Image 1 (tube, rainbow, N blue to C red):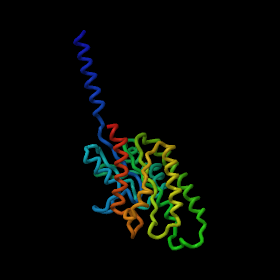
Image 2 (tube, rainbow, N blue to C red):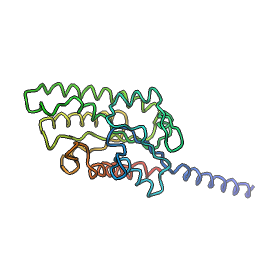
Image 3 (cartoon, rainbow, N blue to C red):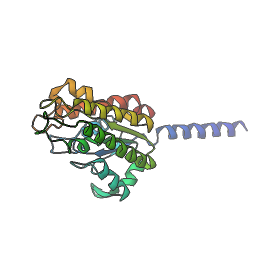
Image 4 (tube, rainbow, N blue to C red):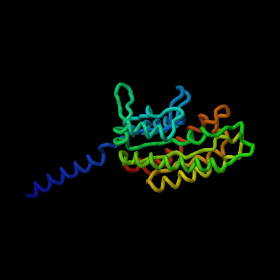
Length: 242
């Protein structure tokens, strides 16, 4: 009887060790717009910095950013999920719904193009109905809420939503409050849907070098700074689970 108890204890111990160590790798899915994707070998999106960090510490199972596209808006991503878009990752075809289900970590950068697409820099400084921009920000939040509801149907793990930065620091300061307003609405929606919020608005305002002057997109330093913000939160949350 004593031998049986010892054998059972050993089996249970082995099982516990297995359960603790199994699936320690992270399936990383990066969704979003311009700042997520690779442009060139030397000019990469913020998600590459996160990928490299996970890879360095032996935590990366797979990295997928092929669903991200330049100029993407929230409705584009909603359409991709509704249609279960498929892409080639290496030699394997992946569907976005399957990737969402498998993801241990999802980073999401979306919404900037939805606002900047209606802004004409040449007319800024003239008499404008700025309430129009605030109304558009509220519409963006409604679309974002719809997107997060859809994503949460499939992804039950950690989601990191990248905040909004102000892209026109060097040209115009008048719209700063509009972008600040949208950024604060992002924070609210993250709390509602249990999403980790990545703050970059104040970070970019304090560091003009984080913007590329010719495109109003984040510079290489800015993209690395976004990646670092995610890594800090990863250390506090996701990696402690594994």
